[in-house]
Length: 151
Image 1 (cartoon, rainbow, N blue to C red):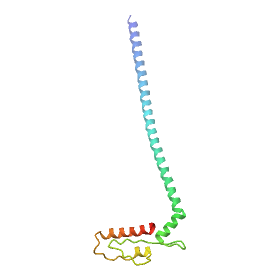
Image 2: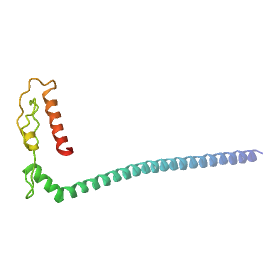
Image 3: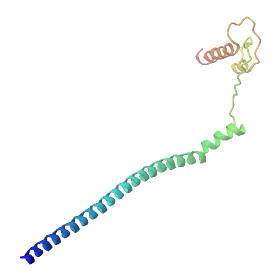
């Protein structure tokens, strides 16, 4: 009877031990699976961030290539020659307007006066002007331009 009892205990112990080992294997496999899923999620997030960075860099590269094309164009070279070197095309007349903030008024010559001469003429002091000097000059110039184009 003792041997039956011992066999029963031994089989029960073997069953529990087997069950414990199986549970350990399942837990270990679950932990490994969890780590792998977590690792893949992090990699997917990094890939997405890198793809957005790539798209941004490609956009900037397109913008820069457009800028380089413009800088190599003839229109840019012509504009820079005009601005920096004061160059002009043959038979082209240029006008340079200079604003003089200290001016109080503009004298208008009699007769057939050239608008350019009127604008570029040195200002005359006007003691009776109610406006500020810069505003008076600006309004007078605006009136002259208005008259030039619309009268």
